[in-house]
Image 1 (cartoon, rainbow, N blue to C red):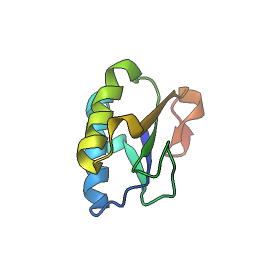
Image 2 (image 1 turned 120 degrees about the vertical axis):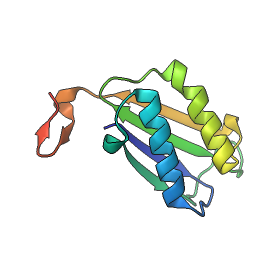
Image 3 (image 1 turned 135 degrees about the horizontal axis):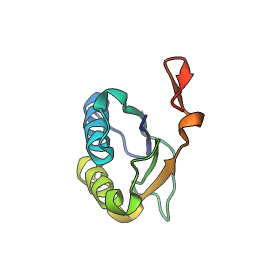
Image 4 (image 1 turned 180 degrees about the vertical axis):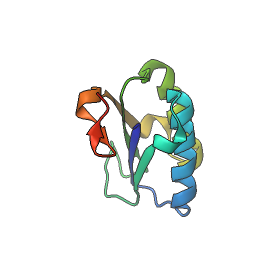
Length: 110
């Protein structure tokens, strides 16, 4: 934890680089070790957001450390810069998960 799931209609050429870069960003924004950030990418998805132009949906989950009002702009700017998606075609969903509902290494965090 944290976990970021990226779905986009854009085709990403260097998936590994994007996943590493967004993991670094999320680690920095949440103040959590990059070692524990999991990132998933579904690119070239059939998506529609007002028109058929490129769009992106990001789900970010973490046990605490989420401040959506502080993070939304930086994450949107990152996606816009890296993927060429207009900022008004990006949705981000933030979810603060209870430590008792998140497990790793065979046990929950709380």
